[in-house]
Length: 270
Image 1: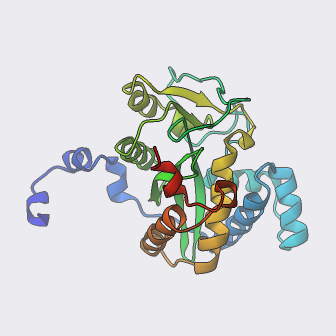
Image 2: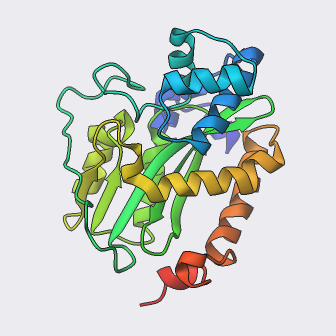
Image 3: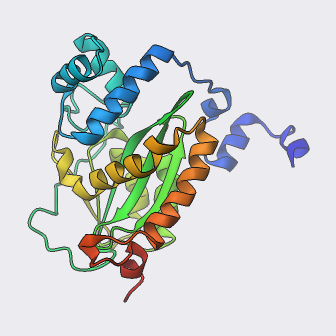
């Protein structure tokens, strides 16, 4: 297989693997000091996902003895993908398509009464001993079942697209909810949803990270029960560990809010 690939142009290999050509050359530039600060920001934001950069700066100073300026705080938060707090006019991970559409929030006051009624998705930062990665997941709101997840060492959109395709091979939601981040407003992402005519698209209001509350709770659970305890050395270790954890989360971890049943028991009960 590898011998055959040598005769295929990189652009064609990228198309076959559904990744960007730049991924072949990607080598992360990691500043150890920045990694330490970002890990501290991650812990603060996981505990208080409604915090903006001012409160995070203050907690860095008082709780971690880290004093940095406003611009550096915002820059590091941007690198971590913490954009939902800020107006899209100023903060975004990549330039969205000029024809990008925004969608209204459809879930206010809506009773969630069945599996595949609402899916929520989001991206979070994952700290590693020698760097960091990004985790995207799609969670069923009714059952708390993690339908699909994907880990990446870059914020390029492909890992979100692959995650959505994998989720749609499991089921189809009535409503897909996300924030207004550039990944989820990308025309490439929207096109996949639009191809499923029965799916309605919902997006959180700007600066309202708690509109996607079930995904925020998932991140807190995953980090405190797995990521912070294991101190993964690299993305491969993290991927193996999270594979084991999400199996446990879906199939063995009983939720009080589900009357001590597992997400899988609820999700696959028809």
